[in-house]
Image (tube, rainbow, N blue to C red; front, side):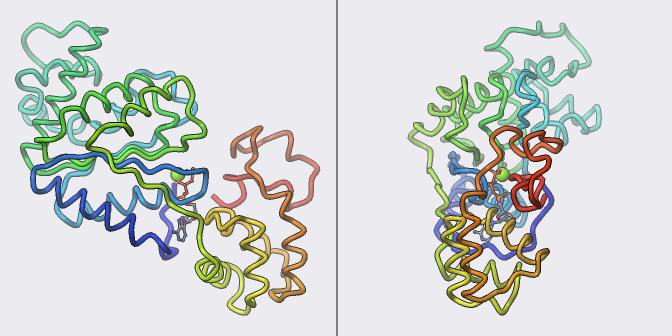
Length: 305
Ligand SMILES: Nc1ncnc2c1ncn2[C@@H]1O[C@H](COP(=O)(O)OP(=O)(O)OP(=O)(O)O)[C@@H](O)[C@H]1O
Ligand SMILES: [Mg+2]
């Protein structure tokens, strides 16, 4: 997702927990943060904030975003995580990173170790163990942040790696951040539940925005003249969901809506149209949206992303 320059509102507590987790990792005590919530509540923004903060502390960031269409690709998320530090490393550096037990990660990443007997693919445990040691080798060079967004779409093998890693984090300078929509968990629910049940896990559940924060978003994204009653109507219509507020503000701006109590009545009237597009989940070309009004035809992602 493209980066957003909109200020992050009402997330002081979450940012403090992230800062604590990063500080602990830098001090050698690893941990896991899960960021949970419905679509649009601001999970990705928090993951991005964690990545930015980690980089500013000099940490190495391994990040990946799972994709719904890539769910069937074993270790797809893992490969993205290690692509930059390992896949793009020089041959000499890669050989160092893949020394010892970490060599067992090479087949998983589609790499050969460049010497010795290639490790047999398909050996699930050895692959996970190799990935763990690769992470440990990277962490020896300095503290790491491992960030996985949209984990509800992650492939099962990558989730197994995260569970394996998290169970061994306590003495590693590694913070793992996993974000996703719990209500959309599928067959891999058990693995994600195991992650959030780990004693090292802190759970973040970003809340909908309050009335004052809603007003700030609407005034910045739609009109600085939006009055209190109008902003209240926007909150009622969207439940304070930041994504819906952004979408709604854009539509209001495009339509030249009246930013007063009078216009607010119309916003309230729109309420029933503002629900996530269940049929296409935001992919373009959704048949169900054809032939409808501009407001109705907007679904989660196509509307503003
Ligand atoms: N606390 C906040 N203050 C202001 N804007 C926010 C806040 N949180 C999120 N936003 C904005 O709301 C929109 C949606 O946020 P984001 O993409 O992080 O949601 P998400 O929970 O990751 O959604 P999804 O489940 O679809 O991935 C973005 O434009 C983001 O900048
Ligand atoms: Mg997101």
